Structures are given as C-alpha cells and as structure tokens.
Image (cartoon, rainbow, N blue to C red):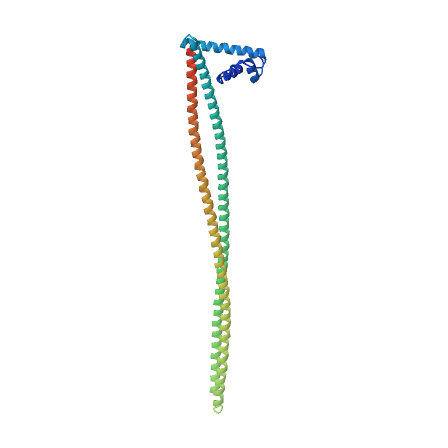
Length: 316
C-alpha cells in the first residue's frame, strides 16, 4: 500500500544508490535525501531490506548455503544494479546528444534553405533587371538607329532634289543661251553690212557676258550644293560618333552585367556545395541513429537476460 508523501520505489532507488556507493542505508540518510515522515521511511526501508535479503538468499541458495555465498550473491546483486544504472545513464546521455544533434541539424537545414531561397531570389531579381535593362538599351539603340537612318534618307533625298534642281537650272540656262544665239544670228543677218564689224564685236561681247553669267551661276549653285553636302556630312559624322559612343557604353554595361551573372552563378555553386555537405551530415545522422538503435537493442537484450537470470534464480 502506498503511503502519503513518499513511495516505496523512491526509497528503494535511494537505498540502492547508497549501497552502490558503499554507504549503508539508514532512515536518517534516506530522509535527508528525499524527506518524508520517519515512520513511513523506516517502514519502506525495512521492506527494502527484506526484499533484498530474500533476493540475496535465493541467489545464495543457487551458489551455496554458507556466508561466503551470501556475500557473493549480495555483491552480484550490487554489480547488476550498477550495470543497469550505468546503461540507463548511457542511454539517457545518448538520447540527449541525439536530440541536440537533431536540433543543430534542423537549424542548419533552416539556415541553408533560407540562404538558398535568398540566393535564388537575388539571382532571379538580377536576371530580371538585366533582361529589362538590355531590352531597354536595345530598344533605345534601335530607335536611334532608325532615327539616324531616317535622317540619312532625308539627307539623301535633299541631295537628289538639289541635283535635280541643278540639272533643271543647267537646262534652262542652255535653252536661254540657245535662244539668245539664234536671236543674235538673226540680227546679224538683218544688220547693215557697214555695221557688220561693230555688230560682230557686240555679239562677241554679249556672248562673253552671257558665258560669264552662266559660269558664275553654276559656281554659286555648286558652292551652295557643296556647303549643304559638307553640312550634311558633318551631321552624319556627329550622329555616327554618338552611336559609336553609345555602343561602347552599352558594351561596358553588358560586360558589367555578365560579371554580376558570373558572380551570382559562382555563389549558386557554393550554395549547392553547402547543400551537398548538408546531405552528408544527414547521412551521418542516420548512421548515428542506426548505431544508437543497435545500442538500445543490445541494452534491451542485456536487460532481458538480467530479468531472465533473475527470474530463473527466483524460480530455483
């Protein structure tokens, strides 16, 4: 029957511990460790000694009936209790180590998952930004190229228009000159023979004046055309220089983006290597758990053997 305040099992555990330490259990000694009332502790301690004496007597009957056999039986009982307590402590310690190792592993797994997710997010963000920037740069470059092509086409159209106008002016000048020549020839035919020499000289002077006027007009037209062509060429040269500068800037930006992508890929490889190490740690943990399971099996086997031995001795 269980008394209030302390149990027989508690008194038995304290008394067994004292015996294993080489100390004889007493009522005061048990009370100093566990508390409890004197009459209850003394009753349980008396029951403990009675039970122990009974077990020792049974073991002694198996070994022999003299006092030496009883002492040997008592020592065997103490050794079995010690071994059981040591195995229990080892089991508890190994379970604590396993729990601690599992907690550390879970922390490592959580940290690794977090780092991997952050790295993947960073890589995706950088790739997205790089793609958007490349697309924007390509679009700007395409627009500028189209604008330059349009300006070049406009300049070419202007040049063709100027050439066409120049040809029209040349044709008009030639027609005017031909008409003037025909009119002068008619005047020469109709003119007086006496004034033929003077008319001839006048005709020559007029032709020289007309030739000079036509040449001057041609030179002015060619000069204006040359000025416009030079201006157009300068504009095209400046536009080409700007496009070339932008191409160099875009090339530098592309190189920088490639460097960032290469760096992120290297970091991704490092994270993959960390993941491999984590897998190895998990494998080692599984091996450790297997070893602990084997130790627990051995411990259970030893406990069953002890119980079987105790039971056999009790029956005998």
